[in-house]
Length: 545
Image 1 (cartoon, helix red, strand yellow):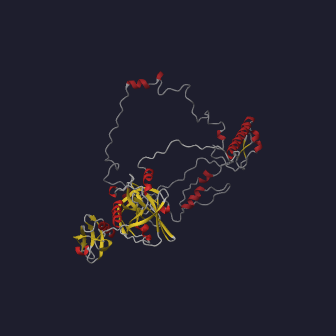
Image 2 (cartoon, rainbow, N blue to C red):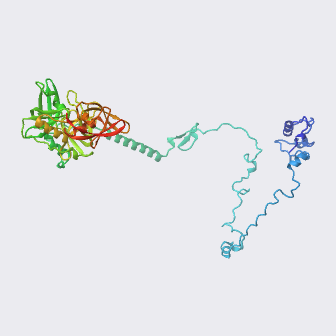
Image 3 (cartoon, rainbow, N blue to C red):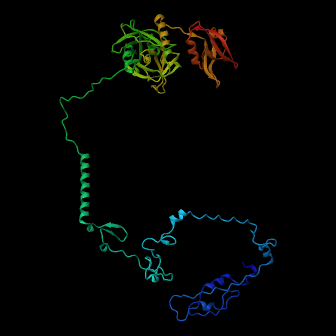
């Protein structure tokens, strides 16, 4: 390390460097005086001068190194910073513990010495058969040539020079079938192919052409035209019959369809169609919906006809109709009709298979199938052009039901009628997989009353309500109470919320109507209601609607 004050004023390290590297041109004489502080000696000119009579590349003798001036002694501050402390003797790591001696491996066993000892008294490994090969990189080795010293690729002092561009042979001068053009692309020259190779190439081309032509012919050929008529032709048919097991849809349709009729209503130039179910074949009673035949009741010139499965029709008269349940009964004068077997909706569970039979869209004898998708579904009925105003506890099904199915039969897997198809849930007038049927238990009760008296009676509480909820509990809010009604006598007030009738929960105004309608006039029921935030119960004796 050279102290900063060792540099002489006016000295230039760059000048010294250039002067030490550059050599004067041949024949010139250096007369300049070396700058102050230069390290070049007097013999430098002689050491780097061209020898007398020398010619060719300059190859100087051993170069003399420039005399390097000894650095000045370190200052006291440097010695204090980098010198050995006075209290330390020896090396800086003199107190490092001495490493333990390395373990000496024991001598090998005698058996190992005998197994690996050189044979013939030789020391070390024995030579391979034929003696040791010579050293590869010698004047006699395979990778050394006699003119190696004059090889320009091995001579570091050989001059370099540029040559002309690469020269490619003409295609005519190249040998073999594969030639390279001036752009380096490989080409096949057929004239240099052997006779056998050329014959094979030609044969392969001919085979490929023949194969392609044959495939094209097979794909594009057209059969010859044959006569259009073939007298005496007999088509094949299967000998095995189709098995229709009992309880299948086809079996149910075969047994129940004769008991389902089409109802045709004509009022002047207008007409409508529906369906009906024969419930008393001996006397000709047919159950249908009130909204199917209500438009013809009391209208002069109106005509109602029942068309049976055999295509014959008979005039039908209205026996009675009930707008509060949407049930009506008509009668035809045709004894000996097939009577439907009536079941019970109480025996049905969700998921049971059902079959709907009727005349949707005027298509008589139509059969659709599905399952029971819900039970006790409160549905409000209000037919356009009809006086029907009913709330039913419906059997919901996904069997397709369309306009015209009204009054038809909903049948279970045994062939028993469990409901009268009445309504559909639709956005545009067609079936969307949600149909509703009046339970046959309700239809049977109303039909018996209509056949017996021509009218039906219903129980009434005497309140008008609407559905409400507080977010946790639903109910029917009492809007008004009819004077002298069962509700007024029981102490039910406006703004009360009815939440149950007996043991049946009430969550909407429709459910309240269904719960009351399931009782008979004169029945005493317990009504649970919420008044001013607290629950209370009252006893009510139902009136006749």
